[in-house]
Amino acid sequence: MLSLVGGVVVAAFSPAPPTSVRAVTEAPDEASASLAARVQGRRVEAVNLRSETSTTYANPDGSWTLDQSLGPVRVRRDGGWVSVDASLARTGAGTFATRATTATVEVSGGGRTPLVRMTDGAPGSGSPHVEVRNAVGARIDSYENSVTRKSIGNHTTIEYDLP
Image 1 (cartoon, rainbow, N blue to C red):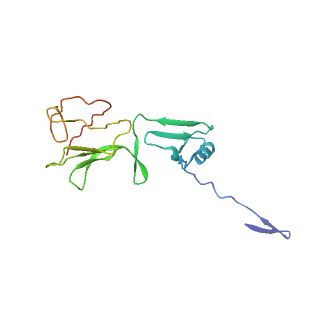
Image 2 (cartoon, helix red, strand yellow):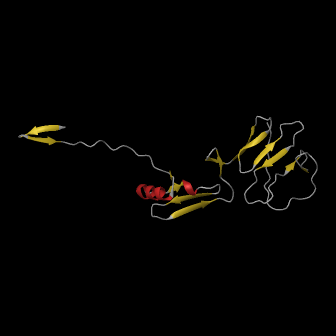
Image 3 (cartoon, rainbow, N blue to C red):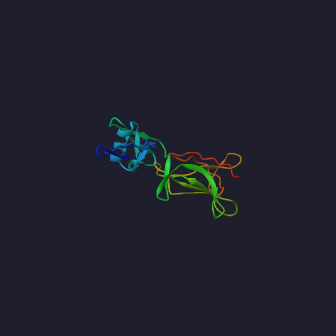
């Protein structure tokens, strides 16, 4: 607002009310994360350091925190990260496949296809595999043949109930 007082123009300034600012929880790189953490007084993730098993945060005091998981908590899909989702979805080929996992597990929808296929591999395992059991609990391979020897090395039992 402008006023004329004694031949002098006086300007009065009334600042706009403060607007609310959303807190930043992640930043593209270490420098941005560090600055945002100091300004906000809370930790901020440095996204460029993100991996399948780790998340790195800049802390307000200038230190860094690394959250490390024993197994994958996210996987890359279409150029970005998504949370691991081992649930099954029907594919266009009539099979069922895991939605978002490091190793894609594909289960037959019936017919003469292999019962289970696994592709891409799993981190930390030189010989990834899926152990499958039939209705009575006996170990079988992807063609429903009996398997009598135990698998060596690392493995995780994956169980699914088909719809």
